Length: 475
Image (tube, rainbow, N blue to C red; front, side, top):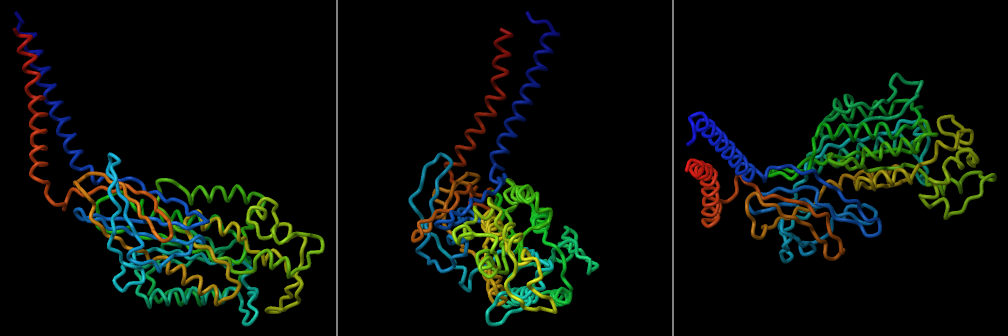
């Protein structure tokens, strides 16, 4: 026979075990109910330079209705905005890998009056280096590059206002080492935040007028300000495009880098500095930020042809191959061994006496930065082309909106979806989507009965089994 002490100890053990089993069961059931609210980081696949790409930039669910925002880019990362309703197909599968037949979604085109533009925060980094005081290379109407850039930014703001786009803009001048101005054009999170204003703010006019009157003389430091701008936007907008069940699309985050030169800050460590920037741009588990780059000036090939380069013999193939330009350091070679041919005076400055490096645009690096972030890269050589490029960047904020009913949708279940662009033979990244818990249609009767029966069995076993075993021991 069991004595009183053993009986009491066994009873306490069983009671404790029963409470723990019930608690674990309750937590397990609760986690199943809430599974649809778990967050999973967004991923962004790189565009194939040979064919272009399609990217799902965000999604929401309302019951079994799924809404996607999709960006389609050409092989040069230029937004494709002229696709039609029948050009899209949805491919979806459930968590077990069972695929559904292709779905024809309802499509709202970016150019439609019904199209909604996802709100955006845009940082414009304006190069204030000394080379911006020179004329551009327009053959008909040359302008001082700083004036051309400022006029282009104003055209960008005017167009955004005319189209009533929901965007905020921060204009940030960049440069270092200028001794003729009180400002060193340092880009900081504080300065970016203070200047981040709705696109219709009257402050922009005063700001641009101030920059137009500034005597530029700084050197070019592109990487640190760009890193600061990207980090700032991420910190202001924590992890966008998450696997969540809200009904709002995350902001689009954009940086526009407008420069006429190349990164000459501590040039001997340029490769290491760029690697650090690249790690920031490609950081995993971070909010995606798109960087558009605008190189305002001549290509290296044109500069070579228009300069005295008797001491340097290079071919057109070498001067147009990005990898060769970087590995052979051709920009440095042109800067050190070539001189300007012309003798044009701008603001009483003899162009032929100026270091030719002030006219070099680092197209390979600017292109690489844009491609890393699915941005657009443009290299205009005159003010009108700069304005046109900026307005094209603005158009990239417009995206396709696709709506479809998820086949066999069940609340809190996970599905995998991709978009196929039929005429372009493009497929988007595949993204995980969870159908929401709250606000969804009620479970079907058989589903509710199965859930009730399962819960009853679990609680029954958790409560009865310990006592059955206890009674056996007593006997």
